[in-house]
Length: 495
Ligand SMILES: Cc1cc2nc3c(=O)[nH]c(=O)nc-3n(C[C@H](O)[C@H](O)[C@H](O)COP(=O)(O)OP(=O)(O)OC[C@H]3O[C@@H](n4cnc5c(N)ncnc54)[C@H](O)[C@@H]3O)c2cc1C
Image (cartoon, rainbow, N blue to C red; front, side):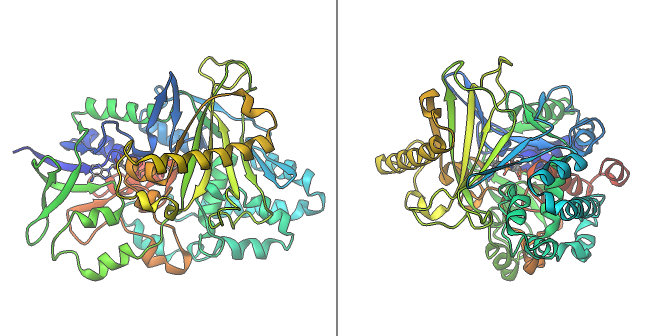
């Protein structure tokens, strides 16, 4: 029987970073991944020679010595992962009804650019920018080691809600809506999401915003190469079905194949609810199970993956956030007629580096209940009515795109789609939730899950602890890993 120091369940960004950090520091580590491809949301897929990203489209703070640059440098990613800087004077374009606004890089530039749209609100925008800087610098996710969780919950900035903040900032609703318009980056809820999440993510991109050239799987491949170089093992097509315990701790995992693997420690990179389902032990009390299964999760999405005809569509070096109504917070719930209330549209960096886009992605929120009746079906075998459903939704979204960009449909060669079921089955997130557990300032203890579990040698990592996205998951993986390795000094230096 195989035996490791540390077994990691799942090869998402969090699992791979933990694998990297722990194997580099001498532990014998194995990562078990249920898919044939590693990376979770970092996965890409290829159709007719075009590679599409699925869950990592743009990242922030990658200018030399900025936060993600320091993280990438530490993880040895800078050489392997090629990035492309978005437009400095408008990396995100916000389209609300018939008006267009630009988010520019650099805090002063951001304020100046937006003030051109709201000349009477120059002071309010300056205050907003100063608040963003403040709240992101005192953010509870930065600069913490293994005692992070207790520190974290004690911070006041966690208790301020994003909606409360915007109401205190200004009663100019159009301005509030523009400033909140990238909330799809965290699937936020106005009365629940803590302000620091908005501040941290907005600042992350305002510092500098980048696309990953050739797909986010280059991040996963680079981490894999280093991890294996340190002696780590990655086993794909290896779904973990059980975590076995004695009376005090976890002792082994069982794979779907029936194989049992022993280890001294375990880290789960999947949703805590999935992890608890693998555990049949009195060490996990019913109340903890209930707490985890009762948390709300962020909404899912429906996506179009578009291949353009060659040389037809000028490459847009920015992202488009489109809202059909003024209220940018009210998009995750909708009637069939209203869908989609909003979407994000991004071109991928042309592989040939030319002036025309080769591919693009459109993402719109979608509730899981729309696909719930196919819940028991498997990828590629969901039936004709499911295919018809996807076809209908594709048409609606393409028509919306055509309304906003007249003539675009004629430029499209191929379109592929994904639904909440696709996301659920490729990443293991509950109901295809985009970012896992929805952080709620009104239920801090319930929605901020510690990386420590009730089992002393089992830990969590990934987007459901701490926060999601390249930054949140990155920070979280350092916190989980610092249970094994003294990373306090490195964490202070990087974050
Ligand atoms: C549509 C979409 C767009 C996004 N865009 C961005 C973006 O532009 N920028 C950004 O920073 N973030 C973005 N994110 C968020 C970001 O991708 C995620 O927060 C992050 O990648 C999650 O990493 P993770 O470590 O939690 O693992 P996940 O990516 O959730 O991976 C978990 C892994 O565990 C595996 N697994 C699950 N159960 C088992 C089991 N029983 N046995 C073995 N393996 C198992 C899964 O197969 C998967 O590989 C986006 C997410 C989505 C869904």
